[in-house]
Length: 189
Image 1 (cartoon, rainbow, N blue to C red):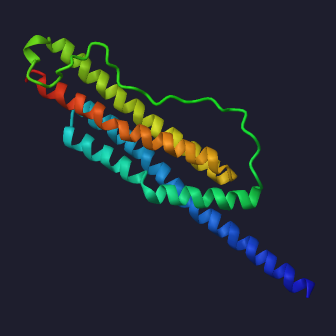
Image 2: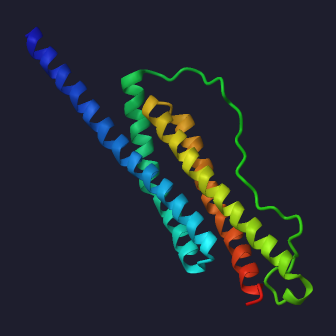
Image 3: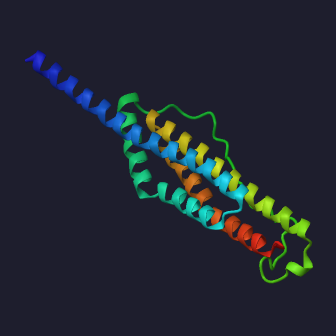
C-alpha cells in the first residue's frame, strides 16, 4: 500500500513539474518575442517607419493580453505549491513607468503649426518621442521578465504587480507614438 501511495505522489509531483515547465516555457517565449520586438521597434524608429512602428506596438500590447495574465496566474499558483508561500519582499520599491517628456512639446503638436517650429526643433521632438518609445519597450520587456520570474517562485502578488506595470506601460505607448507621428509628419521633406 505504501508503495502505491509513493508512486501516486511521485506521479503528482511529476505532473506538477510538467505543468510548471509548460507554462514557464510559454512565458519565456513571450519574453523572447518582447525582446525581439524591442529590437525591431528600435530599428523601425531609426528608419522612420510609421506603419511598422504602429504594428509593432500593437503586437506588444497583444502579447500582454489575457493569455499572459492567465498563464502568469497559473504559474504563480503552481510555483507556490512547489516552493511554498513566498517570503516577504525586501524590495517594495516602486518602479516608475517612463513618461513622455513634455518640455518643449507644443500643445498643438501636429496641428499645422510646423511653420512656428524650426526643423531642428521638430527633429528634437521626433528624437525625444522615439527615445520615449524605446524606453517604454525596454521597460515592458524587463518588467515582464520580472513578472515571469516572480510567478516561477510562486509570488503571485509580485507577478501580477509587475504584469500590471507592464500592461500600463504598453498602454501608454500610443501617446508617444502619436506625438512621434505628428512631428514626423511636420518635418520638412
